[in-house]
Amino acid sequence: MAGRAARWGVALALGGLWWWGMLRLVLAPDAGVLEGAVVTGGWGLSLLPVHCVPKARGEGAAGPRRWPGAWPRWRSARGRGRPSG
Image (cartoon, rainbow, N blue to C red; front, top):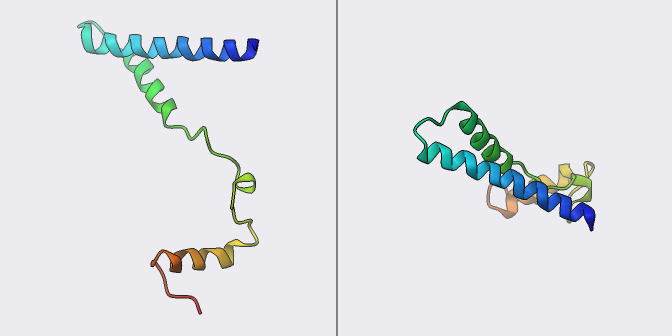
């Protein structure tokens, strides 16, 4: 329970810091590099694929030995390659 509260606290603090930087950039005439770095860094972190799993653990993922056969079938099923057969 304490770990969950700590994660929420960190998330809220970083979110508040991002909003502070964004509002300073938009509203304050003397905003500068610090605010820009905070906003850009927060935006960049939002692009990270944090919900990805390793290929071996993915549902329906083809293992390395199955790729040679799986790739042509996928392409032909999508209409992007020669039909198999």
